[in-house]
Image (cartoon, rainbow, N blue to C red; front, side, top):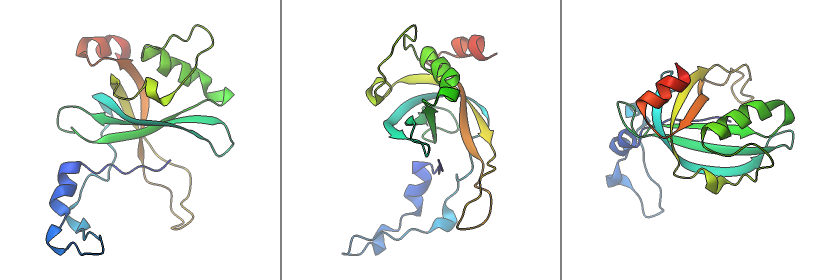
Length: 163
């Protein structure tokens, strides 16, 4: 999945509303927009702002979700990630769900609504891609990857969990 992190406050400054035409088009000067880089690796208080079920390229169920930074220097920035339900990925998925407070002791029904507006502290890392963009022939740019999470946004809780 490809992601773009554009802080909303920076995008607002790039909109030239004086030239919005009657055809509904918006003219944007992207030379003033920054923030396409991933968030620096670290711990962030975040809220799940979108979640949806889809399928991977291999046809396995996949939960795609977006988390927004709630405070600090990177407030309003987002991380887009996914949870795979492929048998080889269930260890990570189980850990993430458990840390969000989902009882994973037995059979669990997962719906996107379980996560919408959920607040958690996430440990985010930067992942470099080995996949090539067929349009450019270059590797996809680095992106954020959620490495760990814990429900709530207590600094002491996240320090205990993540070290």
